[in-house]
Image 1 (tube, rainbow over the protein chains, first blue to last red):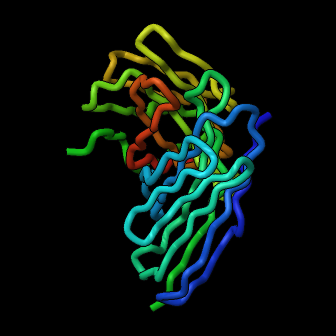
Image 2 (cartoon, rainbow over the protein chains, first blue to last red):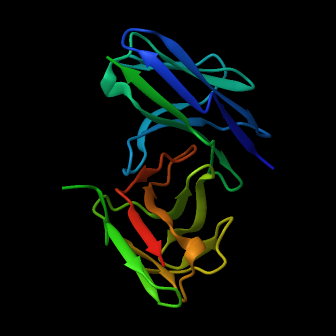
Amino acid sequence: EDQVTQSPEALRLQEGESSSLNCSYTVSGLRGLFWYRQDPGKGPEFLFTLYSAGEEKEKERLKATLTKKESFLHITAPKPEDSATYLCAVPQGGGNKLTFGGGTRVLVKP
Amino acid sequence: DADVTQTPRNRITKTGKRIMLECSQTKGHDRMYWYRQDPGLGLRLIYYSFDVKDINKGEISDGYSVSRQAQAKFSLSLESAIPNQTALYFCAIAQLAGGPDTQYFGPGTRLTVL
């Protein structure tokens, strides 16, 4: 069964302190990996899709990378508005059901 | 206007009551999903539908039923609510594509069962 594990569970950063979040997965035949951002009490907001090892995508202070076993979400010089829970997910089965990791809660203090 | 809307946004009910959560979309996407989110357990798939005549169970469908009334509407019902169904419920939509579909989520419904 596909499994997705995120670490750390929580991350406290000072504004400007760069860091990375990890998403490791066990999937037979990875066909993509998704990153979402979720604010408290709101629905997950799509950030990136990565399709193959070596691929990288960027959006503002966020950069997602993918290897054969894991993905990283790098947050460069974070600001308080980057505080959120970041979720990763992989498609499984027929290709359109997502298995989500437990998420990493990021708090950026000014 | 939001692409995915969910009603109600908040609901408090009692054990044994029947509850319906509704989801509607304006994107014309074929695929719709219902998830629940619990602290420490993440997002888990309840049901999904690839079109009006196609309904599939997810990993935690017991105690739930769904109806795809139209391409744009997908409802989740709790026939007899119980306290451990207290959770955040999210609807998501996706369009059939050549690769894995990107799912877009609604704002959620916070359900409390007393």
